[in-house]
Image (cartoon, helix red, strand yellow):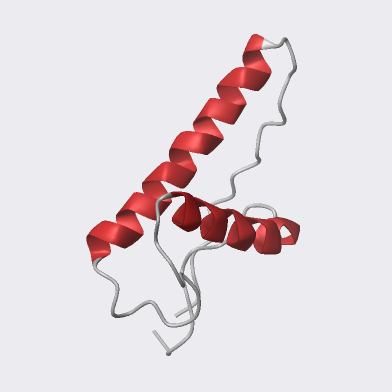
Length: 84
């Protein structure tokens, strides 16, 4: 895989900037300063904590919307293979 490329694709590409901001906010809440730019020197445990807490918050928001009787949108998952 070429440098700077990633296999992670957003189901909703328009949400990319919001997800980046969400990642920085979550890192800040965990007390991780300067969580931007090159992150190769950050331990995987720290990166995993950020991602894990993001998922935890997204699940909580989904559960909250269900509890309030709102029908959240269901993402349409496609089986697209990443390009080499």
